[in-house]
Length: 251
Image 1 (cartoon, helix red, strand yellow):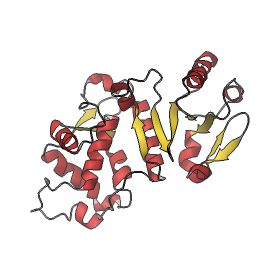
Image 2 (spheres, one colour):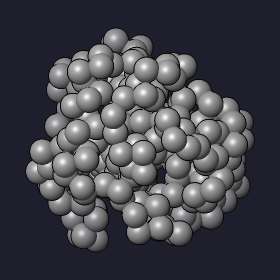
Image 3 (cartoon, one colour):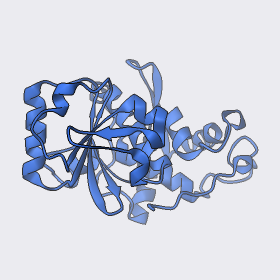
Image 4 (cartoon, one colour):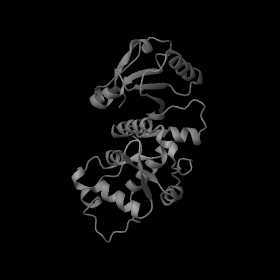
């Protein structure tokens, strides 16, 4: 399901790329990279490689050399994020114009880089990792928090919305366990809104018993540990106080 992902050719996408090939010969994968960065705001290099060059060895250098060419041509740029001590890749006006020409901007303007983005950087990058994980498992219909805020003007904004065979699933990534009051507010908000039939509460630590035992719609709210999701993949367990299922069930 989802959008087509172009087959990666490691031999012609990296350091073996003929020098005479102009970078203006943009391929489908280049446009997908532009759109992914645009919707998320920014990515780190390893995220781009895992999302679009996962079948190529790092030694082949396909991702690195293509990113260098796209930067040289002015489509993307990078800056050093001092808090994470890593390079952040973002879209430039020229790349945005390509998306605009193709009608692929997702209805949001070009992301403006400023120092504020580093405040929530850890959380944002972990959410992007989740998007990449679901994409690698065939679930690539995703609406980012940025699109939900700037295009859809939603009052209750999840960290992302995953399209699972036509059903909207809200993604809530929790770096740590919230207070009882916070969880109750989240559950009540989703129950009243009725916009999302399912909500995946993806927590970055062991799931404690007490959130599972709160009052919520057990057909809607499901918990999963993020480390289990990445490690166990198809066998990762989604659970609530009434039932459980493994991730493979929805693939």
